[in-house]
Image (cartoon, rainbow, N blue to C red):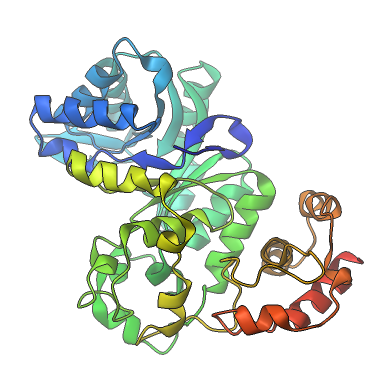
Length: 384
């Protein structure tokens, strides 16, 4: 297993994490087997959005006697009311649901306390100007929550959350299909085939999503990924909006090459699916590579946009082209050069100004990126 730093929290987390959706359908024995297999595979990042008692009990039992092996992302404002899951902002429900969470987990702290599922602007305003955020801050001050996070499918809302300075982790839905869509407050549009026939669907990353990824990277706010397979649609050529099937490894690699991403919460329902996701870290580069598929797929082929895939390498002048492009994109998305990005660029051994314009990189780029022009723009942007 490979590990990354969870943004400014400093926590070391597995590139592949585990969600909790499957636990409501598994027996206690099956749930423990899945958790044991995850720990054995090196997984240490676990998400618990479920309010269902059996899911919370399963994670609590799985952590018993080995809490140090778990970096737990658990959700506030997710409640179990009258035998049903409910997202709530009613403090009369939020508080007891959180206490139930802590009791069932059998722990005195949560590593990342997620404010659950904020997609609409109105809901964001309610959460961040009312008692929910105050409750979250109180739990952090008391040490019961070490870091604050928020889950969302809307990049505009996510950007606002990052800019509050209160949020250290954003749980966000990332995959190449969702990335070509403009922001929307209705999460259901992400799953509808008709959505991808709209005129504003792109063949590259939507600028608002790119802004979010760039902002998180520069501010040290970690992205934890949900829905990397698009609910399974990306794994099926008939369901995929691209008209071609990706593999599990390609989906995971796409997510892990986005700026700001620390871990991908793979959707698994059994040990075999878990092991397939965990095996990502041991696969050769060619099995992870998504560039050929996305650049030549029947619908929405990605063009003239650096995907940081590395196919342009090796550079004749020794430039790390993908990294230079990533830093330049970070600045373009924010309309400025953040000091942290400037510092990271400054320590590169070879910079955009070292480009000799030979064009060898462009002949290898599967996305048709005009790399020589990009290097010139980066040189002007950073002054070297």
